Length: 79
Image (cartoon, rainbow, N blue to C red; front, side):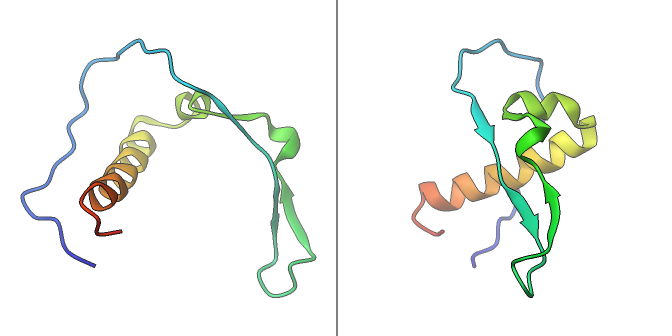
């Protein structure tokens, strides 16, 4: 995969936007057997992007950095 150089993501002031929301459901299972349920997130009421507000500032910045890198690579046909 290509490397990014001279790259940064800078947190700006909050914005107010109207964006879609997504409900996340499923189970996390043991990767070997696919049968042992480690966690059932269906009842966790995970709604994206609302769930971002439940993360620390550092966790939000790390998450955004990863998503932005994926978007850059997709935008330029590299991922």
